[in-house]
Structure formats: C-alpha cells, structure tokens
Image 1 (spheres, rainbow, N blue to C red):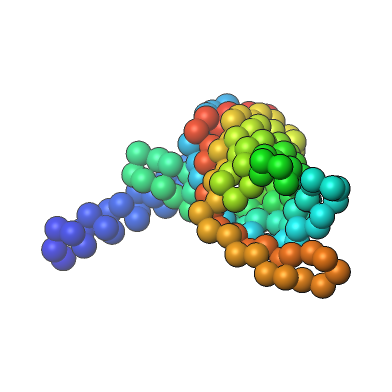
Image 2: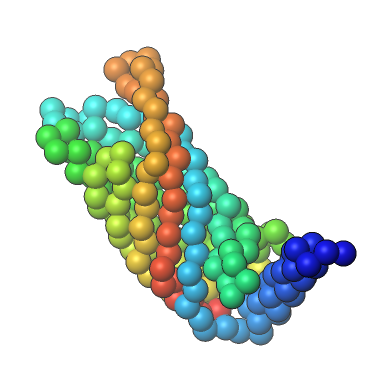
Length: 180
C-alpha cells in the first residue's frame, strides 16, 4: 500500500473511531462546543403577501458535517421547513425555520432557527436546540448561525407565485450543546 493510500485508510479509520467515540459520549452525557456546516439545497414558493412584501415558504435539506482534527465528518441529514418574509423595497429578509437533524442510527436533534439578511444573499441569526430523541434525548444549547445562498433559480408558477430553487451553506461557528 503506498503512502497516500495508507493515509487515506488511516484517516477513514480515525474518523470512524471518532464518530463511534462521540456516540458513546453522547449516550453517557456531554457538554461541548463544535463547528459544523451543511451544504444545502432548497425548494419552495414565493408569494406576494403585501404591496411591497413577498413571503418564501419552503424547505432546505442537506448533510451536516462536524469539523474534527481529521477534517469534516458527515454526522447526519438535516431538513428545515422555513418561512422568509422579504421586503421588495430593499430585498431585506427575516426568516424562521424548524429543523430536524437525523443521525445514521436514527437519533434526532430538533432546532429552531431565526435570521435576518438579504434575499438571494443569505442571513445571520440564532440556532436554538429544542430537544432530541435516542442518544440526543434532552439536548439543549445553540449558537449563532450563518446561512448563505450560492445560486437561486426563480420560475413562474400558477396563481401569481414563483417557484424558487436554491443552494447554499449553513455554518455553525460555535454550536454549544449539552446532553444530560
């Protein structure tokens, strides 16, 4: 086995052991702060809801990665139904959403997100952990969140609405959590 292949196998084994170790710690109780991100894809509809206001209703989904000493490790799948109110004067926006992050073993984390920023650019806000199941039962915590859009496509839809598809990233620089 050459040096690159050996490093790749060693890295994969270490990442597996790290995830397995974190799973055991989560079951026994844990208090930590992590860095994580998710590259997401979103879909929904934009409705005109006022003379100078529109509202996006949809969801974004993606894989959540936790940053470790060995690099990012896939840690679960996220889905976040969201509503975003958009000012048609200056494209400013305020959004709220409710997220579910599901780990490979079926354990879930629930969270609420709020943010403000600019439509088709992104927003900054707060991510609050509200509970969980399995090894995440009773989880609390949260931290600042940065949500950025990288690409958006609007298409006409029936009844004076537009369908929107977008991609982007969610970034948690300091996500603190406590598991009893």
